[in-house]
Image (cartoon, rainbow, N blue to C red; front, side):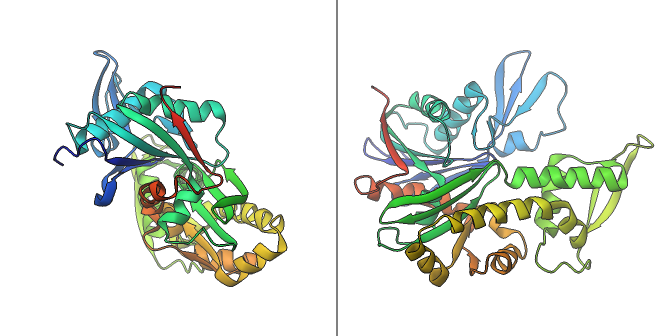
Length: 342
């Protein structure tokens, strides 16, 4: 348990569709678990959050439901999201009573209603002020990119529910888009592929494990394999099948092409001087999707611009929320201050 940290601690929250990460001042990331809540419908109690709840997916009796309170990067279940935030903050410090500032990430094109839902979910934690930072801004900060220069910087942040693409210069967003396409969508692609080809129904966790083990959009050769297990819809009995990296390529490639085309559209609508900077510096990949095998090479080939994954891309957005407090007074866009006492 982290000891009481006092009134002046700054908290950063990367409230993602797949995972929630929390940073605390100079301590960096102190919490990293799935954004999942297990709820007992009989007693109306929260029985688990994070990894404990994630392990229950697909394995609970009917009176226990496992909920992902965020969908496509935004809150879809306010009560469960509030419970998730409170419980996760309680875990890192049971005495965290007064927190002057919290930074929370939101997708680039989140609506005012969606932003307000995030604020409301966090305001009862005792925060004096809440800041919303757009995910690509946090991703670039977390990747160690200097966004203060008069120079174009481009990021493709592939999270669990959304992909955020942005070009920044001089602490401001010049061009951006957000797709409701991320790691969860790729998991569904894999589930659909296995179902259509082998008539075996697999679960979300199984699909995710297969993606992590095999996902390859560069040059798959069919030599890597992974066995998935589920239910044979023809017999109704448990069954399994061996997938290869080539299977994984066929399962996810269409959505990868959609993602790449969105990046192309941003490049095409970016001012020429900034485009030249991006050509020199390359495109930064962040988020869990950056770990897909060969994605950097695929996008480099398709776009004609060097594309590379940031160091530790999964934690870039979370690190960026911690870094954001240094930029509160200078960020021109993508960073909004919201007082909960308004």
